[in-house]
Length: 267
Image 1 (cartoon, one colour):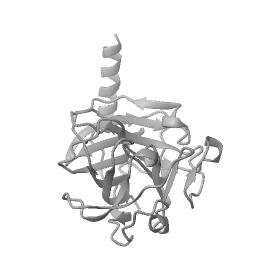
Image 2 (cartoon, rainbow, N blue to C red):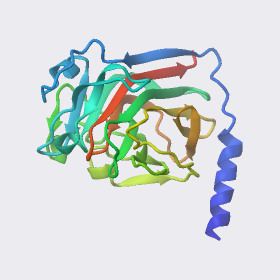
Image 3 (cartoon, rainbow, N blue to C red):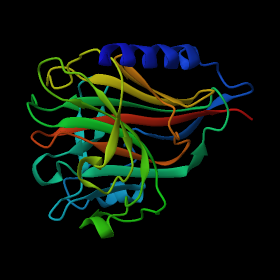
Image 4 (cartoon, rainbow, N blue to C red):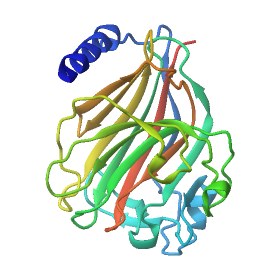
């Protein structure tokens, strides 16, 4: 019975949203793009260069900011955003941007990034989220929930375990990004394909997109150009976003590079 109900729901959503049109009169507009070449490579834990580029770091008491590292595994090159693992693990890298609203069918917001685990990871996950935050983030914050600048931020995230074996992704509708592991939350129903993200010998190009449909929101996750998963939210969907949040595995240093956010909004 549950399988029949799930299939019916997915089929209905697919018929409604699978072939989403491109918004009429819309063009791709780069919201921001970071290759970190303008941020001086540094091992200083405070990562003041990243703060100057509007990247801030949010997490639990005792956490430390991410920093700038170096990588030469293509397509990463030169200075990169580095999560050093340990006390910087399970901390979030966030960058805010002007509020973007998906108001018409086909409007979309997409983030693309290149990811490389410096060592084979067997614990933790990569998490990419678009959030609507009521708070401006202007400094690093490692504090309890009430002082967390992501308090009451809501949105959508995709996460995938970063191991040397193939793992599946999951989509989350976030109700309060200041809560541990975004709880309480809603897991969106999907049928993911497995992929490997934790192999230190290879880097990966990733994409997470959110598109407005006639009756809700569609989210899509792609790895190395192949769509791995998609899901639909038709229950009071969130349509305005102003914050990108990234989380990386805690047990090994990881690198992210060529991070770009692109909006395709109808005029």
